[in-house]
Each structure stands twice: as C-alpha cells, then as structure tokens.
Length: 68
Image 1 (cartoon, rainbow, N blue to C red):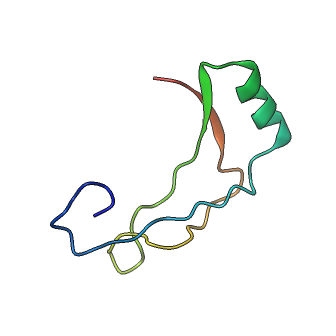
Image 2 (image 1 turned 60 degrees about the horizontal axis):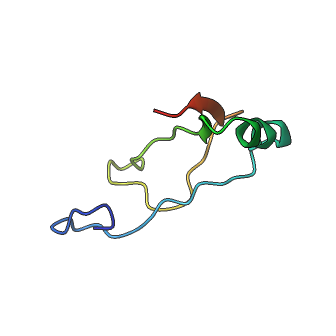
C-alpha cells in the first residue's frame, strides 16, 4: 500500500543497511552532483511475497551511477 497500491493486502517497508557505503563513494557523490549511489536487491522474500524486512546485500553492493 505504501507504493500507492491501495488494493494490495501488503503493508510494510524494506530496510536497506547503509553499512556497505564507503567514504570514497560518499566523497565521489559530493564532488559530482550528476552521480548517485545505487544498490540492487531482491524485492521478494523466499516464499514469493514482497520483502518487508531488512534485506541482505551481497559483497560490495553499492555502485556509483549517473543520474537519469
């Protein structure tokens, strides 16, 4: 429901740990306003429903990407 789907039976949020962000990545984003940090993670839990908890990220999950 929080994503604007009022008919959804699910109501929750995903918590993304920020611990993998490095100082050099933060400095790179601060130095160039056309870039941002992005991370990808599965949006579904092992049972097939939406991920509604803290997600587990792989090794070195954060990447600098250009703004669209």
